[in-house]
Length: 99
Image 1 (cartoon, one colour):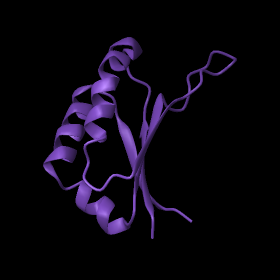
Image 2 (cartoon, rainbow, N blue to C red):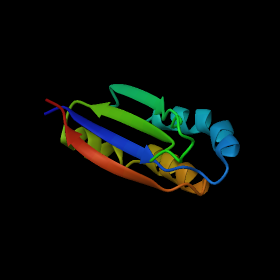
Image 3 (tube, one colour):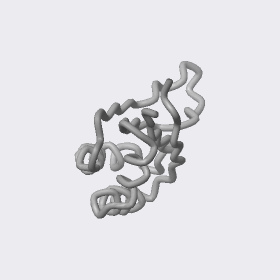
């Protein structure tokens, strides 16, 4: 069954610094084996000025749960998650069945 990994990236302490690092993060995510599609999004600011529930989302699409699970156990995933963790910004990861 097609599977999507969604990363919900929390609001960083320094959004400008995070955004300057983000192209590298996205490029590293794009190197995951068996990745079929990558979709990145930045959360719109709230109109009333209150903090958003998250800063960005990153969706990583795979043909199967097995492919997604194998991909996150690779050195490419290790490099990506180490770099994401190095930003000091927390995140939540979800594996979802598509369909």
